[in-house]
Length: 164
Image 1 (cartoon, rainbow, N blue to C red):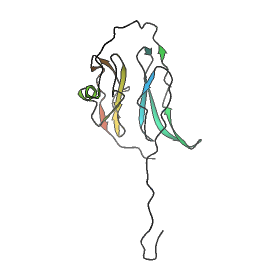
Image 2 (image 1 turned 90 degrees about the vertical axis):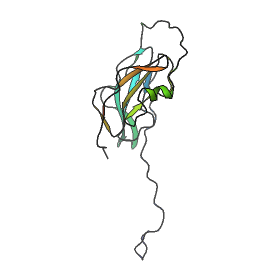
Image 3 (image 1 turned 135 degrees about the vertical axis):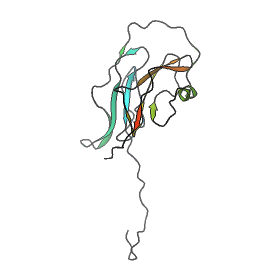
């Protein structure tokens, strides 16, 4: 309220970014889409023993239903069971958060799903909100006896944030 003195009185409401609810992609699908704010991209990918191509998603405001939601930016993810998967020997060396840090994933420019993976489990790394990824697809990594192996981490350039 503006007072006669020219000063305002009262409390200013807290402003928090809208966050999309966690999506449910179905069996065999992992993602980096948890807790994403409006404008943030994320990726869905196929887990161990499933095959398919990683797909890009984005958290956005849907004016039709007045809600924020995760929406695919091209084709939706489709993962099928891998018919050629055979039995494996159990391994005891899992990948820890320290393994992710050793792989370079603790850097600010990366968003990933590699926090705690078991041997042979798959995870994904891409650029965080505010960074632009040079590559067309994110890095898919596999936990191999306590270390992450696979594709090179993406190249992330500091970009401009899109404000709505």
